[in-house]
Structure formats: C-alpha cells, structure tokens
Image 1: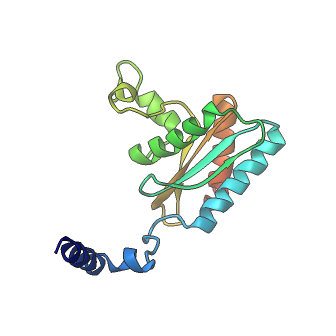
Image 2: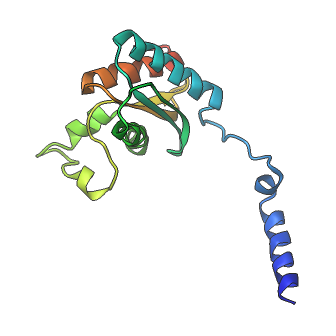
Length: 165
C-alpha cells in the first residue's frame, strides 16, 4: 500500500512539474544564456591575462545563480568564493559592488548592510550585465587582484556583452 501511495505521489509530481520531469526546462526570458555568460568570462580572462593577474571570474544569471565560472592557474583559492559573492551582491542590489560599498559607508543609507546579510561584498569587482534594452540579465564578479584590477577585469567582461565603457 505504501509503494502505491509513493507511486501516485511521484506521478502527480510529474504532472505538476512537467518541464522539470521531462528535461525541457528553458532559460527564462531576460536571463543570460550560457553562451553569453561564457563570452563574458572569456573577455574577462583575456583582460586578466594581459594584466598578468590570475583571477577567479564568476557570472550569475538574473536570479543570482552561478552560470559560468573560470579559475585561472595560480588564482587564490580564497578568491573563488569572493568572486561568486561579488557577482551575487551586484545582482541582489542591482548595482556594482563599488557603488554598494559607497552606500554602505558610515552616514550613508545602507551603512552596515554587509553585516546584516551574510555573504555580501561591498568593494569593487562586481558589475551588472544588461541586455541592449538595459534589462539586467545577470552579473559578473571578479577576485584575485587589487580592487582596481578586479574592477577593470569585471568591466572588460561586461563590455563584451554590453558594448559599453
């Protein structure tokens, strides 16, 4: 009897979520594609290579989920997590991590935000990724160099997608 109940439950679950059960889940409209994310990473890698700074580069989708990642040879292990957190932080607040850092200074409206939400990064190296209409489709986070180097690499990655800067 128990096996029958489990079978009925699994069957009903498959009806409720047909895309997930059939493997037909699609990228949401307005979300960065894998190809776009990889192009962003490749452009960022190229910039980091010209600077001769080993970096960790993370791209997240519009929901803040990891879409693409690269760790250059000799990049700091501790920077893996920082790169991902920079990308997520930029997306969660819809601004660069540098701008968030400015808003999080004493006397500013978001002072202390990094201590209230575990995992936020409030220094440069996280940039938004938008489509040609300006819709946010993801973000990039870079870590491994100085803050200025991280920002430069992140902006190079974003430029590959945006055609700006």
